[in-house]
Image 1: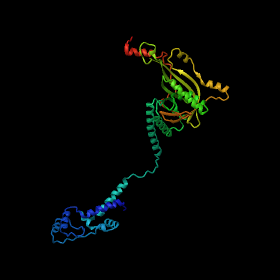
Image 2: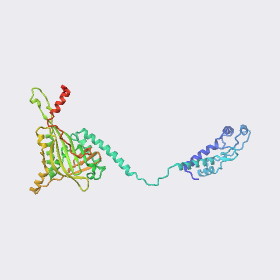
Image 3: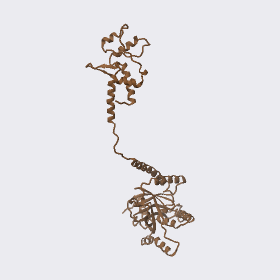
Image 4: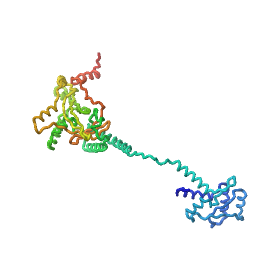
Length: 419
């Protein structure tokens, strides 16, 4: 029978204790004997009969009880001592049961321990015979946790900086780190070939002007062939944004279908500013009327061979949902910029010109977030609105400069006149 070294050590301690401790009143007898022995008496254990008669004889100082002295266990080799215990040579730890059969405590204890040891080993689960590889599942879970954490931090920056327009240098650097981490853990290897990319996507963060998510401005950048031209185009975009400083940029959206990208850029501009110059009372603003409209551009999209980007071919630019009376009618009757037609005309008449086909790369795609980059690496982060791929219907916008809405609100809040 084989035991671990720890089990044998415990057996040795237990058996030594059993050698000196009686099961009944014999303990008292041993204590009285110890008082009668000289202080130099070696460590011993007595063989005694557990009855009242021998206990009374041992009380007499003149009696000469028989002792079976034991060697100090510390003088023996550990292996020998354990073998003696296991073989039952320690007679001082024997006892008799009711049937008169003599057994040894050390042997019985070892047997009991052996049974317990076997039971414990039997209860331990056996090694799995099938190899279950959980590395990939664990890695995917860890990647999702990292992405969720980084995405939450990025969206907080986006919300506090007006989609990135008012971000300071530290916020921009931090956002760049988060975007790079998300891109490194992109869960969709070929995003432009994945149907999940279709639907309505709202721009929530950008490292450049928001309107540059339009394929029209991407095509304008693709016309530039040198770095100086690209720098000049960046300057033009900066000036264009400053010129729109009095306007409020609303939703910036991309609507993606398998072959088409529609960009919607909604804007509101004060209709009657600087009213204090024309009235006898001082008023620092204008009337609460706005000119509303959405600049809608669309382009054909073709996935690249690696499934990571689109090649864009610009088509048309329109203004939809205008609330300016008169102009709305003209715009709804088909007034639009035929960008592709103009490009084709230039291609036919200028040898050095070709219709621009900018590359728009998608670097991260999940069921709710898309990160894309233009040819200069500028970042656009989109949140998915819905799975619908139909452009927005602006036909319900009233062409009244918002006057009807203003009057209705004034009546509800002030006059409260109802028919």
